[in-house]
Length: 233
Ligand code: SAM
Image 1 (cartoon, rainbow, N blue to C red):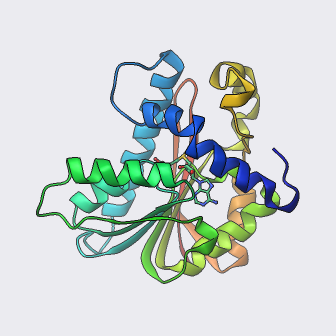
Image 2 (cartoon, protein in one colour):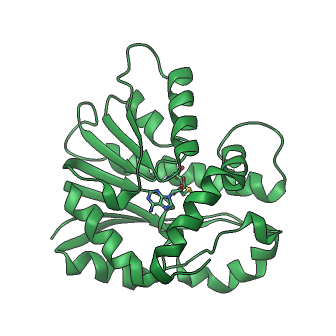
């Protein structure tokens, strides 16, 4: 994957519409056909979603009726429970395959009384509008640091009150290197993964007038995720 001319983004879109879609649909699903590593990532990711939901609920305003943008929604792991809680959810992803799987699951799992999220195949750079809260879980891994600042600034510009982000922290770089062979066994299954230093993400937030208000860290054997909640400084 090349970074030149935004090549990374096309590679990521292609991947999550094809082999990556099959792979991650399985990891984020609940079927038994996952190996040990995939199961570990499934459990780690579920904890990230759970912790993000806790952050979202732990506020002076109830989730019900709040507008939430889930940028890079994947198969809807966060959007669906959010809609169940009554949030008005705008779910989008660069991959049309991921978004339609999220929509299919939402129709299957949400009660008729719940407001369906609005699903859209869109890369997060093209999102506009304003939302009470913007959430972006485990998407920064597809951004080199040179593009991460702009991405964070854009997400912050869409949020009125709160931004929740998760990313693979650089502290675990060597751990991840050791395990990466098992994570991505073949070149066709991998997109390039970028880890981020927490200080770099914080600096990007500060540059646009935001500050970190809560932190979480989720680690399992093969999964590492730093979760940050940020608010206008
Ligand atoms: N946020 C979801 C979750 O936690 O369940 C999905 C995480 S998955 C590891 C990363 C997702 O980011 C993929 O669905 C991918 O298609 C999406 N993605 C990557 N780059 C993106 C971009 N520039 N704009 C929108 N979505 C993007």
